Image 1 (cartoon, rainbow, N blue to C red):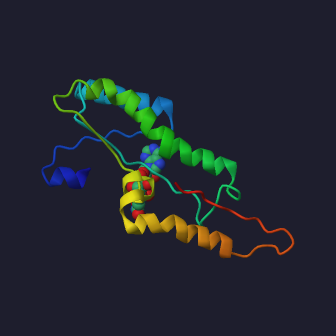
Image 2 (cartoon, helix red, strand yellow):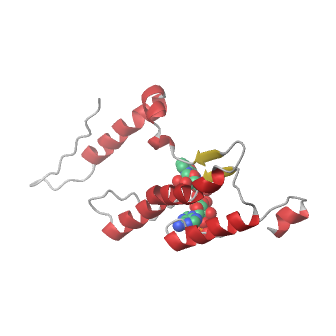
Image 3 (cartoon, rainbow, N blue to C red):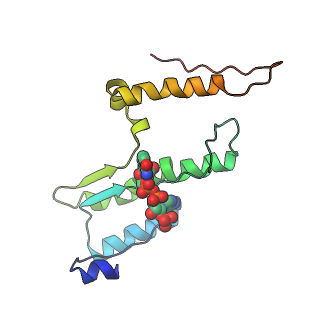
Length: 142
Ligand SMILES: NC(=O)c1ccc[n+]([C@@H]2O[C@H](COP(=O)([O-])OP(=O)(O)OC[C@H]3O[C@@H](n4cnc5c(N)ncnc54)[C@H](OP(=O)(O)O)[C@@H]3O)[C@@H](O)[C@H]2O)c1
């Protein structure tokens, strides 16, 4: 913040945890009090909590829950809380930071993204499997 201000940028900081209702409500209250409107909301907060690739079959359920709380419910919570302030702006904008893997357009038009699910399938099937009870995985595509 100090560096931004030193550069002449009129910056104002509001701290919020997107996974916490009260924190988001408090941030909305602060913006309402200070500015009365919001021009742009960028839903950028995101986490990747596992340190190694971790399929749902091996990932602790709490980790999955925490990831969804920030990456999925977070942007919904923040958007719902800030929509009234966005509606006060002349040309409001919401920018949701997603991922290439979440883009249906890329997954159906870009060779790299189209190829990735097949690479993943090969990795799972080619990985170590107990000979007596192999677990097969298929990803149907259509
Ligand atoms: N980097 C990539 O290759 C890549 C690729 C595809 C998509 N993305 C997406 O791009 C976005 C930014 O990624 P990045 O690489 O810049 O990640 P990053 O450096 O880890 O930054 C993530 C930011 O989200 C904040 N955050 C995490 N949980 C939060 C919460 N519950 N409440 C409020 N803020 C929270 C973090 O704040 P603190 O530092 O205070 O924890 C941090 O400022 C994410 O949505 C990510 O999924 C990134």
